[in-house]
Image 1 (cartoon, rainbow, N blue to C red):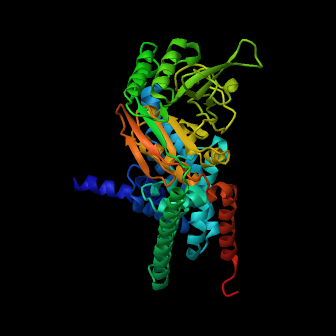
Image 2: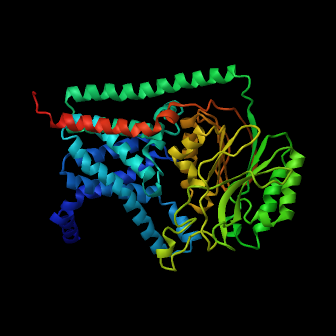
Image 3: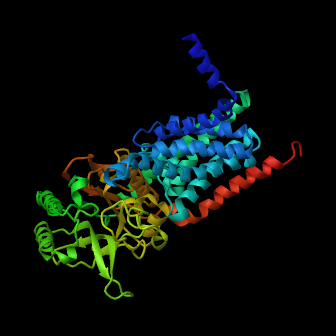
Amino acid sequence: MNKWISTLRDGLLSRPWSRWRLEFGSFCAGAVAVLGLPPYHQQFLMILGLAVLIVLVSRVSWKRGAWLGFFFGLGHFSFGFSWLLTSLHRYGDLWMGLSLLILVLLAATMAVYIALFGGLLRLFAPQPGLLPLAAPALWVIGEWLRSHLFTGFPWNLAGYAWSDQERIVQVADLGGVWLLSWLMVFPASLLAWVWLQRFVRYPVIAGGVLLLGSLALAAGYGTWRSVELAAMQHQDARSRPLKVALVQGNVEQSKKWDPKFREEGFIKYLGLSGGINEPVDLIVWPETAIAFFIQASPENLKQIQTLSQRLGAPVLTGAPMADRDGEREGQWLFYNSMVLLDATGDLNRRYDKYHLVPFGEFVPFRRYMPSFIKKITYGSEDFSRGPGPVPMPWEHGAIGGLVCYETIFPHEVRELALAHARWLVNVTNDAWFGEAAKPQHLAMAQLRAVENRIPMIRVANTGISAAFDQLGRELGRIHPNEAGTLIVTVPQGSGMSFFQRSEPWWIGVWLVMCSIAWFMGRKPRGA
């Protein structure tokens, strides 16, 4: 037995293992940092994981730093995106081994942005004292690129770790979720600086003051802003709140598109809505609650008309829509849409999803792809893109429609706000994904309300359905995997924020911070 233990110990301490021990440590730090995100909200663990990465990168060459950043990202995104296995394996009918491979490939792709952080940090902050200036800004630049390049995928940005902190989260109306990310990496960089300086007095005192000062400043701003917005709302007599019925059918994903059960799901939503026994302004059903072409189903449309007439409120629902292709005779274009239906049965008030999910709603470069590569969702035809973030007109104020993951893109939701949307409505179907995706997706919807100071109404097929006011405060929810109806009173928001006016310029702020750190790092000491 002792011989086997000695052999194992010698193997673990051998040179090949030692060569990769930093990469392994970075991978583990990335995995631990996931616990800072919803639904866990252990912010200190994310700060600790980021601090470990910064310390490791600060001790090696820029090339090794890039590898360490890559392994951090590989661990962070492999665990953070693990909910994708449900959609790939269970609903996409892919072999589990292939599903795991796709997950790792996606994680590796996203990890390139953190590899960029790891490689450049050593160049921008050659001295530990420059880390608090360079590291948070450089991290946010990476997140900004991840949000924009190649259609973007800004899921699980570091700033979402603050989403359960009502006061701190208010700074999102200044710089969006990216400013919250900066506020997450800044404490980590201070901790790394203190560690690298071996806890000598000046870094400990300065780091503590900067840490407490930054968090106190954020919380103070949040308190002040909350009071100010509440006073503005109280003074505005025209800001009549909206009474909204959220309807969550909890239709099982495996049955949702089955021709034998489509009518059953539709009847379920009609029945839940028919149980509303008080006046409301709007009834909201989730993404593709109508899992067939309502344009070709006049009997079903008549049932919605009757429901709307009886309740005195329109039904805003997700539904697939089809239009004839004006360029190709006999061809059709298909859309993942939101439609506002009332007693008239008019189908023209609709929003067509603009930001489609690659391989979920369309196959990129389809003409060049092998024929065996298909969408993982139902149907053989690709969805077409809508005209863009365009609000839907309504007598109580324009509705900013967001279908499914469109709500995760801060810059696109901002365009809806600038186009004078007064209510943000996100219809989604998170039944495709694992349970961790539901609170993560919900937190992103919450932050869009704060960034733009516009209320967010969110309805999901299997949950979490909820509404948020302009401060990001939850007004009520229907829990996951439950069927039910919730009536919430949603106050109007101011619809104005500094983030709306300044969002394109923030990337310049982060670049300037990195440039200052780079210049200071090359300035000769004593000069």
